Image (cartoon, rainbow, N blue to C red; front, side, top):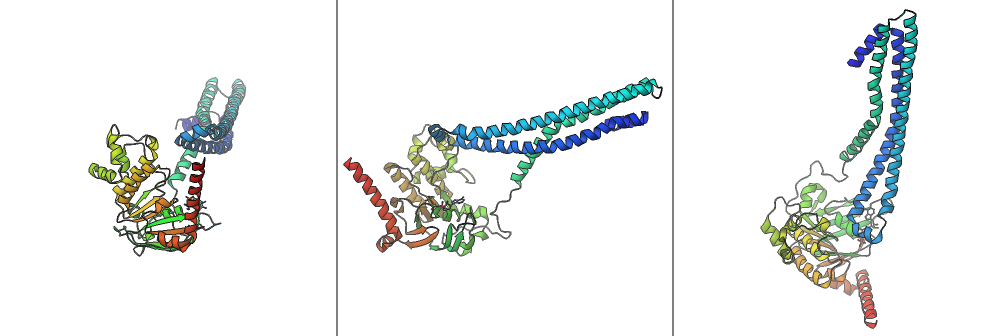
Length: 440
Ligand code: ATP
């Protein structure tokens, strides 16, 4: 309102002088417009690099031991940081150039109006008072214009940051509830893979035409060489991925008919590397539970053979586990993950090589925990080592995404096929290394 009123007064005092002074505004507007595009592009680049550097920073801190042991944190972080710095410097230079133009233009404009105004005043076409008003008003009008030019950078940054946030917030997950999805009932756990195929990329099928029927309460060991598709197969049950073709059914119903949240609440997962959060042991066990029930937590820990070591900790169940559980051993973390799965009390259990990296003693404790977990539940266990197979009702052997053998461990060993080959490889390798050690 202030600016509009001043422009009106200027035009009323002297139309030509006012027009000359106001022409500058048009030029400034064109300048701001052309520079702000450039500043926005540079700001976008800078924020992208800053985001990448932040994610490397996060990863580096998350794997601090590897970085300390192998070095290389700087190699990852410095180039991204340098790129973000360079983009920032370029944006600052662009802003400085814009400001230089705006300041010069407005200064010249005031000088020109003063020059012509003075001449007209001397010729008697304008009073000195009018000339003073014109100059004062013109300068007052230029002030906010300069401020707008100065704000271009902040405005660009705010705009691009908002764009990035909106991008994330408006991202649609690929796997969603069907419009008519229903709540998953408490099933017994009979599962059928019906001609399931899946590919991460267009180039290669990771699972191909897979048929597998699993009875309620059965434990199926998934066996195969590295990259055969075991983890992929398992991650399809809680619908982290959907089949490209075919269907996975639980008790005759396609799992895509169930609401995601309710389906996942029927599945307990103990991954290869137990993921713990930097809170207390009790809260880690109760992860995802609707409410904390200390007795149930203790019971789950007892069944998982974790209660004994937890009670020896200074604060028992309320002991902090440190960031990502670093204050606990691998076996202890594994047993907490098993206690978490037991507490979830889900009819379907997914385990990924539960004995990975454990010594014989911890393995025994984890095995006892697993027995409690697997009782009366349908389970899939990824087994790299033969010892993991103990207790599995059937073994499913995957080879390059195809199911090549299914049967009890004894049947498959007797059949002399792919499973037997894998088993012999392991036994041979172990015997050979043991024999070499004894000889040495
Ligand atoms: P391992 O025993 O080594 O864990 P696996 O049998 O569990 O192996 P998967 O992890 O299921 O094998 O991987 C099967 C194939 O899919 C591999 O060739 C792998 O490179 C590929 N793959 C796995 N995850 C992805 C992903 N997120 N994007 C693209 N390809 C992937």
